[in-house]
Image (cartoon, rainbow, N blue to C red; front, top):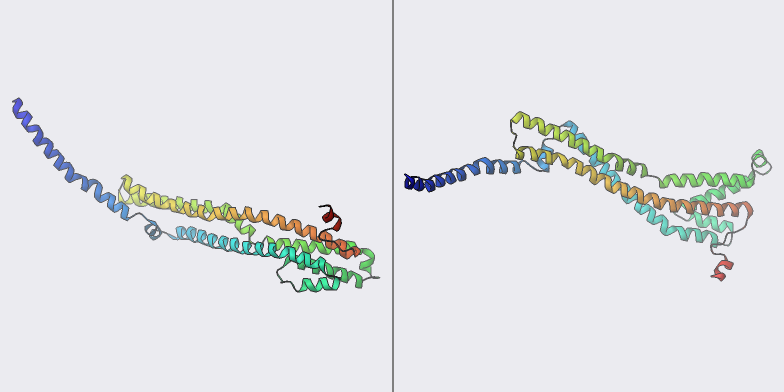
Amino acid sequence: MLQEVTKSIPAAAASVSTAAAQALPTLGGNSNAQALQNVGFDQFVHDFDIFMWIVFLTLVVMSVLSLYYIIFNFMRQMTIRSRMPKVIQSFWATPSMQDAIRAMEAQPSSEPFSKIALECARAAAHHQKSEGGKMAENMSRSEFIDRSLRQAVAQESLRLENGMTLLATVGSAAPFVGLLGTVLGIYHALINLGASGQSSIQAVAGPVGEALIMTAIGLATAIPAVLAYNFYTRMNRVVYARFDEFAHDLHDFFATGARVMSTPPAASSRK
């Protein structure tokens, strides 16, 4: 009896291994291959409904607009910083006020420092023509020029802020828009899985992984916008400081007639 049992064990083991080998491809291989074929961004987009398309197109529009203003602000900042020393130096290096005004008029229309100087010159000329009138009696030359300079600096500062609001909005809202797309994607994935009756990990992991793509798109849209916003905010502060400095010098020049030297001789000799 013992010999018969011993002889039957290898035969039973062989039959079990053969049955397992035949069952494994059927249980795991086909479902894994089918799950892998159904996973991907193409399949994810194919399953979009109207709400998912709205979320996706919103992220695309946010990304395109933020990229445009990132490039636009970079070009503008580089242009302003490269021309700023030359424009200021050319204004103070001219021998007369008329030559300084002509030098500012020769600058491009997008150059902010020349606009501030020209606005100040117009204010001084307008007040001079109004001497003896009510405006000259109620407001001194210095006050009128100061008012004009404040308006010019405010206008140029607002132009520098162009696109900054959009970058801040994209940086703060894009992750939540992407999260909304992920929630909608997971919801539809679970509804479809419940309708199909599949409950394996392969059937669940694929649609859920696809839905997380929307969160990744939202983060990829928001991170460059946040970095660009902080970077350009710092660069704008430097330009604002130069606006104020140049405006104070212009006020003294047009109100008193004293020309401001870019590098005082006494200070340069001490160095």
